[in-house]
Image (tube, rainbow, N blue to C red; front, side, top):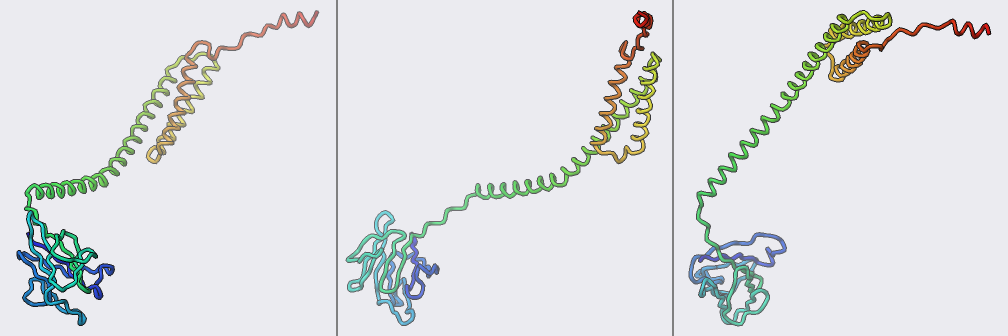
Length: 252
């Protein structure tokens, strides 16, 4: 298993500065750390600060573990604790020697490429495109449908109003004459219906839904009036005045 070391010189690039440090990856079974060129992890001088020739050796242990073996006479610290001899080192541990720190990591193997991931990614892209197309279609289609519905609503209101108006006018013309009061009432209703019909013919193209509703309410009022005229006694003539009893009373 490969390992990685993140190398920092604390006076130049401390962790508090959030600098990435120098990352090195090693595949060797034994990694020697020091300033010698022969070392697998050879570290050069920084600002006159030179690392000892050999600092420590990293060797794999059993079951995928790793051990840190310090060179005799070189002070080492593992996670801020002095190292007195060989010890286990785990991923994420930090080794310090002087102003140098080495953070140890196990390099995990890259996961094999899965075809199912490609299928899911492509499916997600297709779904996103379909959603965008659907949204664009709704943005284009919905306003047109609303305008069309409004136009149909106005046309339906116009047709319904015309039918009701023609029905009321025909009903009023075919009604029997009746009493003088009923005749006058029917004549008044006929005049109102004729005036309303003339208004609708002149302004029907520009009338709003509210205006059509008001015309419908007026027609409903005239319908009730005509229904009242058809009922017997709705406009019955006033009874004859009985004058004889009144005169007799005055004479007495």
